[in-house]
Amino acid sequence: MEKVLRLAVSRMGGGTLQTAAEYSLGLAQGTRDWPASDRRRRAAQVYGVSVERFRKHHELMVLGQVAEQVVALHRDGTPGGAENSPVPYDRMPAAHRTLHVRVHDRTVPVTLHVHSVDLVRDIDVVVSPTNIYFALPAPYKSSVSATLRRAGAHRDPVGGLVEDRIDDELRGWTARHGAPGRAAQPGTVAATSAGVLDGQGIRRIYHVAVAVPRPETNDYDVQPADITRGVARVFALLAEESGRHDPPLRSVCLPLLGAGRGGLTPLESFGALWAAVEAELARGADWEIHFVVRRHARADLLERLLAPRED
Image (cartoon, rainbow, N blue to C red; front, side):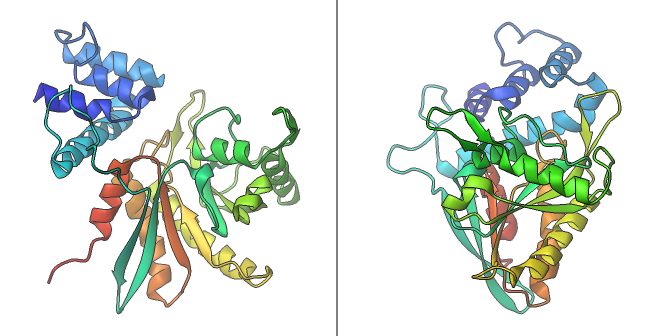
């Protein structure tokens, strides 16, 4: 079991998620005999949150990710030894998966992209989570919104910033719709161009305000109902803007909103997303639906959730 857990954790891609998992399970060097309370406290420090906050939110996400990797190991038939390769040599997991999903009385295609959001190509609208102040994170950070900001900026040949276009446009949107610095209602959607990402066929970015900052902390609260409401507004805005463009906007790509620092599990996030997507498709809308995730374990989860049910 320890070998299986170590191999599962090694597939998590490094960073705070993997480090917290190693401390939580006593896999980090020198922590095997630590009391569970000490391991939890150290894992909480990795995220810079209180032990109580970690127990209620981050710990569920961390252990959920470990469980997904264990399931993936079983599915791939990978032996449970740390010396074995986590990916079979005879194949690599597909970075794009097309699923045929049954929605009411019809079957619709849904595409899963398994890579960083800035690698998406030829999709009209990419959805980006943000906080209720529409304040984008620094471009060097790793979140979806920071990645899109960085990728959409115009830079000179040696990498110097010429124009931070997405951030500039979002600031302009907040100025037109109320005083900058005023909190919007969760679920509000702001539209900007995609900056230089238009060279990849990305035409619009819809910023969905779902993260509510907790006073005097670096933490956020994200409610599933706000995600559902925000995604419903994404489709309303898409219908409003579509005909203004030539050709009309038809496709939309959604990440798992709130499944990072928002503290939601991938299952909670996708359940809230899919509630709005399914409602839109059920009424006959013919948008092209895409989801983007960074890890194959999350893509596997979405594929299982969208698989046709057997009668």
